[in-house]
Length: 211
Length: 389
Image (cartoon, rainbow over all chains, first blue to last red; front, side, top):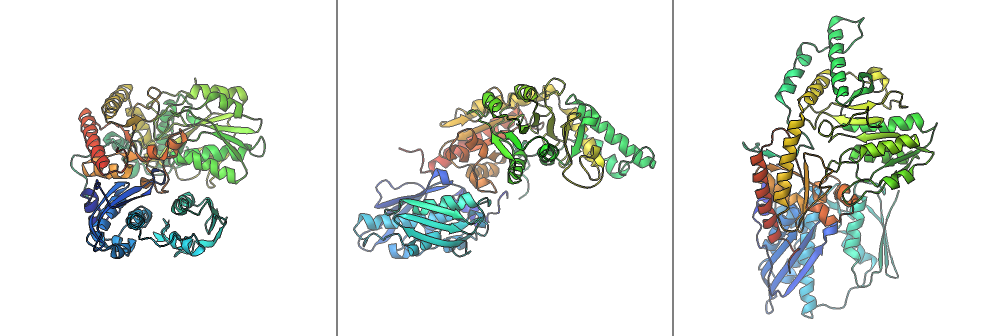
């Protein structure tokens, strides 16, 4: 194998489940962009009575781990309630696939984020959202738990790379404890901007490296 | 996974299959004439080894029109380019100046040697290239200052195959009194370069791209070029590259050079053109690099709406080996600096596929590869959120 993917990952990559588009979805979301490398779209059909996901499909512009995670996460979510589906973690998806290479974690996290974004989209469309949550330091920290340190495959919060978070006047400033010329510095910066830049109350995201 | 019986290898820019005749030429230097090269006053086994090294050197040098004493064996193109940039910087940094000019699409050895020198306080100017990757010669001329000690611009690009006008660049360098290094790893023996005619001072070459062994390459150093060794050790290779000489490698390199013929190169160009013609019929595809000033063995095509690593894995399952400029495929998770360097966007880099031909490819490989690529691209587009509506 040219890449250290498990048999299960390759099986889902070769024959992804639930792939395609739902023409008249109750909710949908797109996460990622061609610029950051991977992109995933998630479509939902939801039973309004039970709030169960009756149908789910995904599309992927991405690498093998992105496609395989899209496949497994839609399998895991199908038939679950929105609340249950929201609890599905990247770790569960990864375990269900027999593990993913650490360097590919961020590509697969995107599929999980896509599912959550689709659920949020359903709630927004159906008036289920409480108030729009403001971007606070706590919120930023929560979001950063989805930004992966490609060296370890663990998020930047858990690997203690986030040294400081400031939020003031719509400017989010994140200090990352890595040299600016670190192999993955650009990658981590792009991902942080990607996770926060589109927020309703965020004007600017600054990522500062310590050296 | 076992290698499929019928595997079509189209990644000859990364490494080539060794030619049996090369191995045959090398074998005696592992088992019979294995001594280090000694002077004529040493033991006879060492003298024989010395003779073999001298002969190999003369033959590889001759392929560049160079004298034997102008050619240094190294462990490959990475070391050669490091020696060129850092060696000239060591020799001239104090004496003449600390400015180097290069291009944005160089291969990693030049790119990162320049960055390493930047950290040492050298100034590096990156000249503009056009959308095919050709260097803007006016910009190059303007970038030269009295402090400029070296221009390092490749002869041919490793990914998109674009050939530079080495002659014109050399003439500009000569006119301004600046040394000129060119990385010819991918064009050596395939595209003629003669140092008698072209004013170039340092040329990087390697055996691994021409069906020679891995771990041997060389650097042409024009007589009188100010350069100092940057690795310390013995006095081998005219006191520029210390270490036990790789004599089997040198002999193999010379044999590999001898085996490349213009007829073979013309055949590879035919395969290249056939593949490009087929693949440009795939909707939303485009050729990266120059249509004419192009390595005879290189095709590089971007397919929109699909990502290269997925494409590559699907092709692998069907028995084809290719390469991609996608970020997902690279160890640094960065998209190809070459595609971005010629003004391409990330999507074009992610969807770029490089096909490079070698001696053991056949015409039937081209047709099979073209068909497989077209099918895989279509499959991946079906599951892509891009390119619809």
